[in-house]
Amino acid sequence: MNLTTYLNKLSLHINNENGKLVSSLLSLTHSHVKGFLNHVTDPQQIDNTCKNRLETPWNDVAANHLKTLVHVDAGDYDEAFETQKELVQAFQRGMSNMTRWCLPALYIINNDLRIIASKADDQADTAVEGQRKKLEEAANVISKSFTYCITDRGVLNSSKKYGTYCMIGILFRIYFKLKQQNLCKNILRAVKAADMPSIDQYSKSDRVTFRYYLGRLYFLEEDYVKAEHELDMAFKECTNKHIQNKELILQTLLPVKLMRGILPTKALFKKFPRARTIYSGLATSIRTGDVKGFNVTLTHSEPLLIRQGTYFAIEKAESIAIRQLFRKVYLVLGLNTRIPIQTFKKALEFEGMNVEIEEAEWMLANMIYKGYMKGYLSHEKMFLVLSKDNPFPSVAQVAQA
Image (cartoon, rainbow, N blue to C red; front, side, top):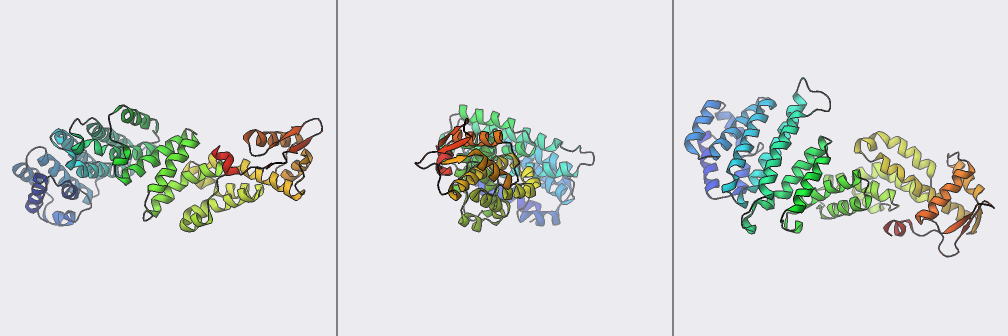
């Protein structure tokens, strides 16, 4: 596709307010890219031709898109970032005269800015580890696209407010990569204060992305009940054809469930092999009360779990494995409801936990306090006295209580 043909097509789709086709012509991966690069690479020619054939802001949008293609083709992501940033800013300047039809193009140019910024940071010779200056700059530009969406005062059915959650998804992805999750709070406050359509009216992909990052945010704040709720919603709404996305959600959802004693099914592990590789050994150890096996598996998986940010949550699941071990003691002793604390101490030692009798007593007291066991401790006689009625309630029921 030569320059003239490209501009004619772009102009036609703009006049028809066909956002989907406009977005394809502003994408870095569409089929027009290769054809254009075979015909034109002169920035001056691009500027002059765009200025003569398109009105503001589209002349600047098209010119900067085409120059970005040239820079990306040359592997110069610093220059590509500058022209892509100018593209987004030119588009933003014209947004007040556009309605909802422009949103597909808004999504593609902002997401491409994020991608180019990441590549420019990776390419930087003087980059200090942990610093991602281009990505930070991209976030500032993209946040204005978010603002243009959420503050739109147009008629609701044609409002750019319907672009809000897609822009949030792009921003949250950047903030998590920058480890600046605190900035997500500003976005959430803005959404809460705005007069917004129900989230159910947004596309499924926008809802899944938003709930995934919201769940991860709650997870970091150790609000595990809310984290589980949002991640569960994201997992259920994510379509089965997006297996990789569902695996990504499970990276945080399964640790939350394991630490609350809610164990994954064999059917789930069969469907998601990556989750099976990471968590099946841990889940089996928890289910069987194999505390030693749990700790061996945890140590083996430690580097990966630390990278995922889930190690400390999984570590908390050890208490569920210990509870299952105590239940095994009860079963082995023939459902005896009066058991010496010394017996539990020996069971812990068998599993590689060399604890004093006082620590074993504290563990038992903690299990009773959490509701994982029903009974009481006789400190004077150093006995555990279990309830005759369901002394070990279902862990999953206790977790949901």
